[in-house]
Amino acid sequence: MRPFEYGNPSTVAQAVALLGPQWDEAAVLAGGTDLLSLMKDYIVSPKRLVNIKNIRALGGVREEKAGLRIGAAVTLEELYEHPGPLGRYPALRTAIEGVSSPQMRGMGTVGGDLLQRPRCWYFRNGFGLLARNAKGQPLVPGGDNRYHAIFANSGPAYFVCPSSLAPALVTLGASVRLEGPKGARELPVAQLFQIPKDANEREHAIAPQEILAEILIPASAASTRNATYEVRERQFMDWPLATASVALRLEGREVRQAQIVLGEVAPTPWRAEAAERELAGKTLDEAAAARAGEAATQGAHPLSRNGYKVQLVRVAVQRALLAAIA
Amino acid sequence: MPDQDERHDSPESEGSDGEAGSDQKPSKGFSRRQFIKGTGLAVSASVFATEGLLKAAAPDQAGAGVEGPGAVKVQLRINGQLRQLQVEPRVTLLDALRNRLDMTGAKKVCDRASCGACTVILDGRPVYSCTVLAIDAQGKSIETIEGLAPKGTLHPVSQAFVDNDAQQCGFCTPGFVMAVKAYLDKHPHPTADEVKASLNGNLCRCGTYMGVRQAVLEAATKMTRKGGRA
Image (tube, rainbow over all chains, first blue to last red):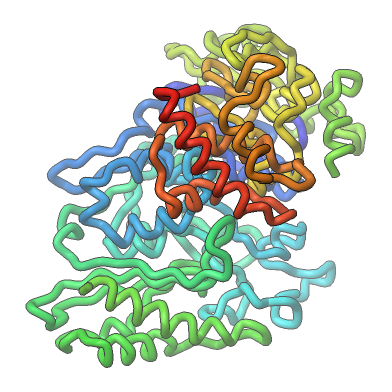
């Protein structure tokens, strides 16, 4: 790690004032489980870290009329210790359980899960977010791309969004509040993620001087049947290979409305709109779930070594749907 | 490489990163003064550099200051004892324990929050000490394997590891013991499945998981029979 200054503000305004307009000037330190590893590998070398763990306004889990408000600095373990609210959002509870290391859950924060950098091994080994060689040619299509994207992977981005909670939060219609020098703004979680168009862009729509302050799950999401299903290579200390989160509005067994979001298969959480359309108005049973799983693969273009993910998408969607009505 | 990293943080090479000389200071393009101007701070940065963390962190009309990048005074409460040291903000709790305080029980293996060998207990929760900054651990209760039992005796968890052949090379063992201790403190009557899940943050390359699981169950029984925490 390169040396850095350390700021320990107690208010959001102080924290924002300590950040700089460029990414390499300062970074927000929450759980540190991703940031410190990136710094040890010299993938990022901010000149200042701003600890946000001592800012009260970024903590706490509150149930309000509007919905469930989760402070961005709340650890996954703290959130998990609110069984009442989580009982209404099994999609989110399952996603937290997927981060199964007690240490990681006790250190890592909800905001940090959303803002962790991609796990693409080219990025982690210094080839940049877009994984290019010295001549600017992309390395992923002809390289070891077994864990890379099968959607939206025609370039320049090939990595997958690593957030465990994002598919569930997008499915539940959650939004985030960002605090910056010009005040606060709200964004749907879906719009927090973006596909970088060039090397100057990041995979998050957050500015260097903004802090992710809060996540709000709207109260209306509590009346959906929702679930997450993760397909994993290893049961712990690893990210899923494919995730599906679903939220359904049902009348009896008939689907009025379906939200289906995939994780670990595209540079952003990936909305499976064809699968949503496939389900609308249908009675949800095993056959319908299988058809939705098939529809969810529409538009998939696997790279040379990740064709297996197409099948994982089928299975994840099917099982998430069946879990939601179980 | 662990060796190199340990050298970085040794007292002899304070401030050096073992690479280019320019690493010793933040580059000129970034000036604290610019920040201070921008945020309306009328306080000299050097004041914060020498003052304690709490002072810098206190709510302050002008805003919060920064410390470092040079060594700063850090006070840690380890196994009930207050220890003072001078470390740069970039020094992890693990390196502070091992390289500054000669507490080498917590092991440095992956140094990337991926193996659990460095597990210590921070305010009752198991954490990867390789991924906690020492400066961030101030004001918290830090439990390490050195403080588990009086010298010459073994904590029931450690004893259960011995009795159940729960280690081979033993390098991951202190991390496992601390993770298990933290878990049993909060869950004194775990089921076999819960024990398995409680070990999800620690890797053993020798593959002694069966013995470890058995050890946890046995330690749980012995500790509850004794009437609570040992």
